[in-house]
Length: 229
Ligand SMILES: C[S@@+](CC[C@H](N)C(=O)[O-])C[C@H]1O[C@@H](n2cnc3c(N)ncnc32)[C@H](O)[C@@H]1O
Image 1 (spheres, rainbow, N blue to C red):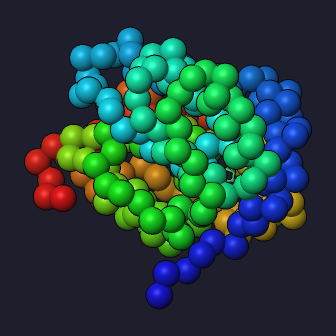
Image 2: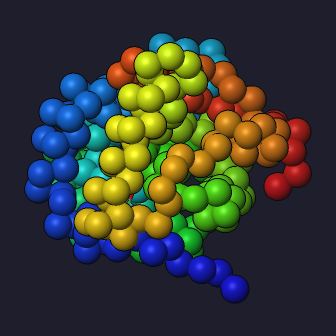
Image 3: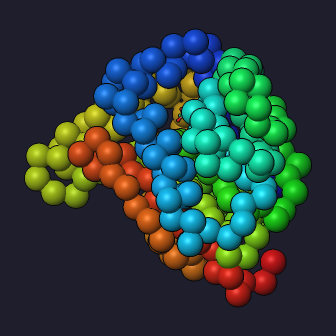
């Protein structure tokens, strides 16, 4: 049976008026930049992209990724999954201002009726909301929605492996999980291993950008072009 995650849309909705400002201050702009420069890089690395027609953004919040997308690919058709009404309203205002063609889906990913054949999937600070079993379930849904050879852009928090950074990243990320558990019902308490999961699905890492001394990373993966759909 399909299990809906414990995360409450009401919690994220209540945070939506302050979300971007809080993220901006607490991460020195890194959350915004991680979502924006990866999409800007997509156009700079046009040779690695196939023509982008359909883009899926999951847990897109107030719509920060729409800005660079509109600048790089103004004619794409975007499907934007965001269960929190406050976040969705803000993203819809942004989409209208940018003149982008965006269809909003108000369900959680696991409850949404999704088509397949997206060329690009963006999961900005979405995969790190889940523990490993939930992550596997969410990524199976997304993998089925992405066309062979399609791109998947992940932006997430990551632990640093060595030195003082290891302690700082574990403490900071642990504290963030504590806050989001109370405010939004997040059940996970540590970062899932997304890299191993992409490897197991046979995705190839094409690009990687680090922010906030490596605690935030954007990674661009490509699905195997030869895989059966
Ligand atoms: C940490 S926020 C990131 C927001 C935005 N991407 C950003 O970085 O500014 C996670 C977002 O995912 C949404 N979300 C939570 N659970 C979800 C689910 N199961 N399916 C789709 N979206 C979900 C939340 O409503 C929230 O807006």
